[in-house]
Image (cartoon, rainbow, N blue to C red):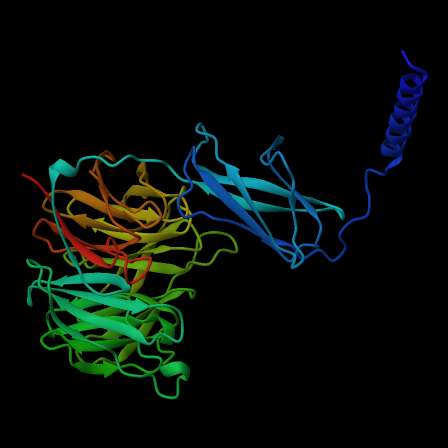
Length: 458
């Protein structure tokens, strides 16, 4: 062994000893990132077991090193460096055996030290199935489809569309033939007076009033609603801006002459007289959750029973409302419902169907007892649901998964159909058909902006 080798090894040993001593001397509580404002988010569009997920951060300290942990397990072998603008992006692989649900991921930063938590939603992975059991017909409409509603009187499907974020200048109300799925009539809403950027009264939610021959729509961006004629889509009445805060769904009880609109973000439903179009006393929705706020989303009506139902996005609850009196009969604790958004009712069996976009599931609830009978995993972003009474099946549009899941009254999945890009809404005609509409990734998306008629084969 040469003298040079001996000296080199000696120097290395000394260096390691010094480094070890220095490391031991470093304080456990080293310099923190005082005034840390870092914010993190996880992409939850359709993260399923075996897929990849992205976690991003902003307002971090440039140069910080980011390590991601689930429990004691490090998810990124090599720390991610925060860029000069204080941002980072990390891609992690979700294990194939991951259990669906809301997973806390600790985002640990060093140099200087800080930490926060991102919530990563892992959605159930349901393969496509059952297509041979259903009849499907699809037609391309216009960009930005939101909701649909069928009118037995006009034998037409009314569809709303709105494109982009404010100022929204592209929006249409469509009258569609339910058989051919072709547009019979289309109108563009009027310009909003004194609005910037040429905004129109863009249409989102839709409901039909066959007793008065009208179509009601929600103008979500202008916090209001409007009424059009079913026959030619002529404007009957445009309510002023601010009439219904962040109006979402609109439902008409033609038998009792009342119109209900959900004020999403608030804690009430706005009510109108269907004939005179005059505002009536609103319905306040009190949450049963301590410090909770009942934030109404979708609405559904059991006209025969005179009951209206809605679900809360802010709390895991559903409300049962007596239409005649305008009083809340009861508030039902839904349990496993995160960001509930869709609701449908089976009046014959007194059951409620609730779709929740945050927990990717469909709950089937016995209304009388308030008991959750079935909790069905349906797919990422379960946004809306319709109950089809002829077949006794519920259809759920899963926006993230790109599917329409069909579930029977026993909580069994009998079909998981391709819903195209971003399935957004589904409605039924009482004759065995449902109409699912979806949005697109852009004007050239061949699978987007379509209405699909679905029925169970007999």
